[in-house]
Length: 353
Image (cartoon, rainbow, N blue to C red; front, side, top):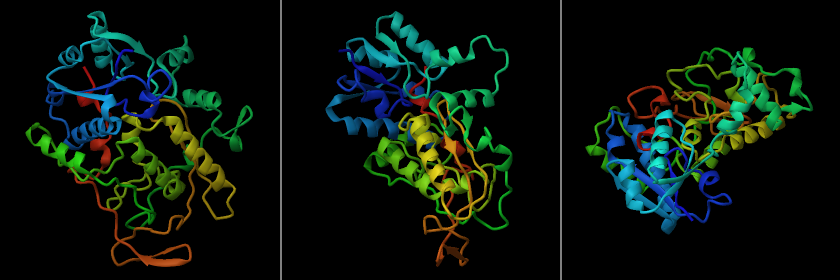
């Protein structure tokens, strides 16, 4: 059985632990030339290497971790043709096709990291002349039965985007539970040391984003339980003292393939449905979407004190349910910017052509 070559955005169990895949050796390639192709942000490089190395450690003897200058050289070291899932960039797709023609790749399989494959998307696109995200999301909600009541959307409206553009409140933070953050380990420490010799921009660390499947599950549960209710109304808000506002910070695990988009969709849908039935006061805002690699389902509201620990401005008293506590604001990521966007790209630096 041919080994399975994984790109750095294909690291989840839905890629390597399904029927037909779980018995294959897994090949992970760290390309020196790809790392140095241009000056990437250091946090992005850290996420790419941390994700691949964590998966290699998790798989143990099943994984073959190859360090080489270029991908061709790495696959030649493997010594037999590999199978690979469709890459998510045109450059990587062209590379894989060249390697297939040269006999280093035996087969190219549909990618399981999206809610639907390229072929299924092409079937939806057909010969239509108008491409609107709204049309696509409606089709995917019907396809996967997300927040649907038979043939109609729950509540009679396809989206509540107009209700989800509340300006930020006139206080320093949203006063909700802060985002989930992983605990770094010796793999992260080694990655940080190895990046000292790689040209990059920005500051690395601490790691703010989930990069393993186990971490992604924790981050998803935390978001759904503690932050989802505020995401809808303040989805477009930016606050200088609350860099994450109510965002999930799930784009990294989604883009690296350690979290499947439909897992996020269904978790949020279930929580939103439960919230809508709750007697607690809440705003009527919400939205749902499905499809693509960063699909999500979001039902917003405003429920104070859902999780208890509510970060506030320094020395500011804030009420969480029946308790009153003093919290400090959530710190920003140390990446030289107030936005986590510097590190939310997929693992393209070692997984692209």
